Amino acid sequence: MATDYDAPRRDEVDLGEDSLEELKSRRADSQSGAVDVDEVEVAESFELPGADLADEELTVKVLPMQTDEFRCARCFLVHHRSQLAAERNGELICRECA
Image (cartoon, rainbow, N blue to C red; front, side, top):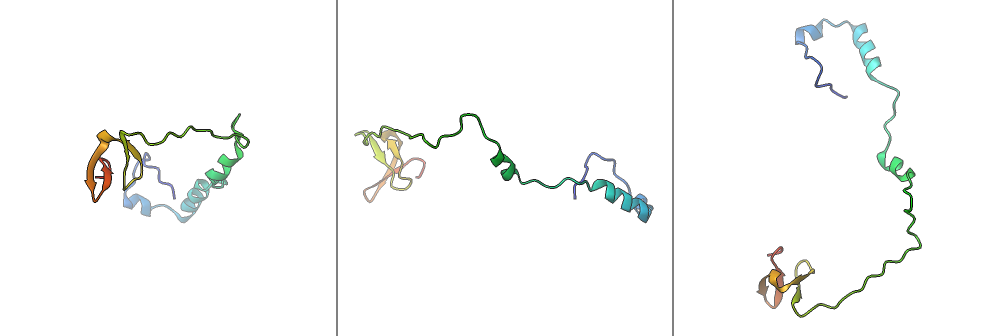
């Protein structure tokens, strides 16, 4: 149930004075006919212009690891030698993983 935090607060004495009919009418007023909509379903129905990438191919030129680079034994990312933190049992570890 939604709570309106901006509404003035009422004492417990005031709450006890409400009639059953008044409470029922407030409850009926607060419940609207709006249905909760799944945001994912709504988002899937939108189509962005130029978003059809089905026939596109991604071409990337892959360079081999350079002499001043190393591959971290923990995160498996290639870093520059300046990011080398430790070498344990022949395994090179970057600063982020150390």
